[in-house]
Length: 172
Ligand SMILES: Cc1cc2nc3c(=O)[nH]c(=O)nc-3n(C[C@H](O)[C@H](O)[C@H](O)COP(=O)(O)O)c2cc1C
Image (cartoon, rainbow, N blue to C red; front, side, top):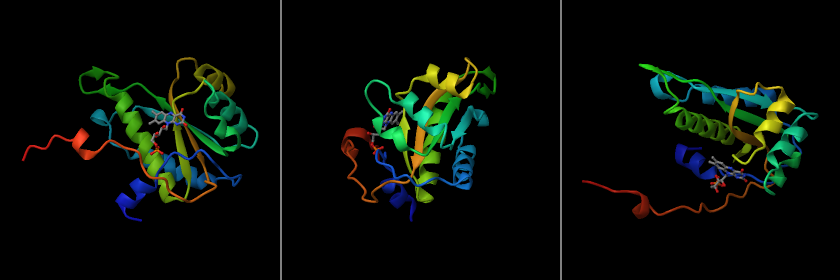
């Protein structure tokens, strides 16, 4: 698969099969996150990987907020993506950390796609409930939760996006 094919193939999956995910594949996804560039190489992220028949359904419940994300009920694995303190040249600053965490999240999504997995990034999460469930410190800054599993269908949807004209100013 070429890079551009990979970009097209990645999409938010909201229909997962019951197939389990190998731990080794999840480690490869985290390795892709590890290699993400970040401001001053501050790497302001950490990841909690939940791949458990017992715990994954409980994480799913924490994502089912505001009447959405009901599809997570049978998702086999989740990656909880946390923002950590960013030490930049000149001192600690979170100015770029959220962008860095977003970039790491996408690297995970692309790695997962390459490995035949499907993902859905979720921002709508009950963070307090999730921290309690996983015994994470109150100070943990959970930015996103990623659903990871195998899609029920391999049909790729058309991407709904703004046109290039709407988003690009070209100065030639
Ligand atoms: C920061 C962020 C938060 C998101 N939160 C949710 C969410 O809580 N539930 C959900 O179903 N999709 C969520 N999405 C997925 C977006 O809806 C999706 O990426 C967008 O509609 C584009 O579709 P695609 O990912 O299939 O290309 C989120 C995506 C991002 C980047």
